Amino acid sequence: MADETNQYEIDRRQKLHKLRDLGIDPYGRRTEGIVPLAQIKSSYKPEMGHDGGPVVKSSGRVMLKRDMGKLSFLTLRDESGDLQVALDKRRLDDKSWEVRSLIDLGDLIVVEGPLGSTNKGEITIWATNVSMAAKALHPPPAKWEGLSDVELRYRQRYVDLWANPEVMRLMKLRIAVVDEIRRYMRDRGFVEVETPMMQALAGGAAAKPFVTHHNALDIPLYLRIAPELFLKRLLVGGFTKVFELNRNFRNEGISPRHNPEFTMLEAYEAFGSWETMADLVEGMICHVAETLFGGLKIIHHGGTEDTEKRTINLQRPWRRMRMVDLVEERTGWRFDKRPLEEGKPELIDQLVGKSGSGDISGHHGGGHAAKMKQFSPAEQLVEVYEKLIEPTLIDPCFVTHVPSVIIPLARENKEDPYFADVYELAINGQEISPGYTELNDPEKQREHFAHQVGDKEEQHRMDDDFLNALRYGMP
Image 1 (cartoon, rainbow, N blue to C red):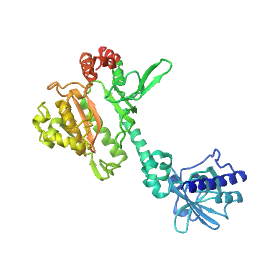
Image 2 (tube, rainbow, N blue to C red):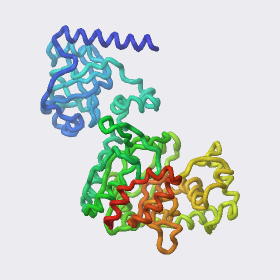
Image 3 (cartoon, rainbow, N blue to C red):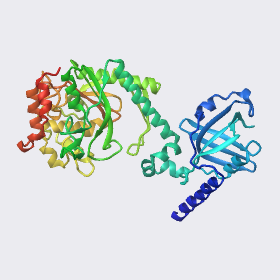
Image 4 (cartoon, rainbow, N blue to C red):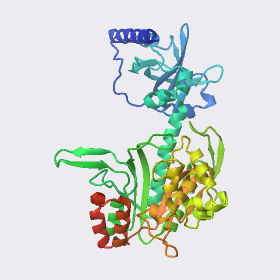
């Protein structure tokens, strides 16, 4: 296979040299007036007939080539779609006809000519001029390889984007979703900000950071795991509604649901609460779904871990339920702040079974059944929820009143401080969004930080500057 691949490249390089011998730059030049293929295609009208339409100019990658003597048909593809081009010897000058014989699949070319159609009604550009934009030295992937080799697609996204139109469609849809989210937030009075990506302390979440080094200051710095503490500093400074839609970095595992580098939206509203954020997120997701997906029923086609096709119903209002009530509804365990082994010990075996090899990989690390018994009742409650219940929540559900020890940056519930005023929004079996009533008591926050970092030797990891900011007052 390696020799065959090399031969492909040898043949293509020979054609590249022939193009140069003809005085043609195989890597093109600046070209004005190029129109997207889809726009050209949509401008066609039946009365244009065979070749009676306007002269158009476009560029694309050659996806298909059929030579028929003095006539060749090419299928070009750009980011907007596909369009057929006809190369007729009678319409082309000698140089353009020579170029035709040196075109390979995957080449980027520029064509110009009248718009029309074939006898079979295929919309076509009848080229009168053909030039190169970039000679491809590598052949495109075979159709089956291009569609099925997941590793190749992930490693060579620059090929996947043009080899698989669905990937381009999804990429553009993602871009549109992000744009619509920004518009939604701005329309509600939020201002977009940027906070530091490199931080002296990694805070705002429980995750392992990436570590780098600042040469000039000779200090370690951390790629942020969350923007939370800096966004809250802006509330101290006087901003009332802020959001950031940007990158975070967590030096942890990789799976179809977790990536070391990912985009997250985080927002804060002065004088709000977890209910304020729940309303915001519910409204935002429904708005995006109706605007870009045409409705509140979303078809999920699965992925590498999940091939099941399912419908997600976003119809409002979304369910809101306390974590302990949801656990009792699904498992029969009525959480009363005592250990799981005293209330429903058979759930421990189910948890170990759910973790495959016996690892428990929730908020606080792994282990087997014995390890599970070492967890606090609060940690056990969260494990039961995350392993046995969250994967079953397909339609949106705000799971509220999470144990406060799990979320040190949230305010404790007034009626029962054992729980925090938070929600965890689950959709399609995974957490999509957490939201808090933020803790703004600096002394209480210091207590939570101290509990989180544990040993006195680790106290230096607390963000004293953030605590100092809270002492000035945060709404």
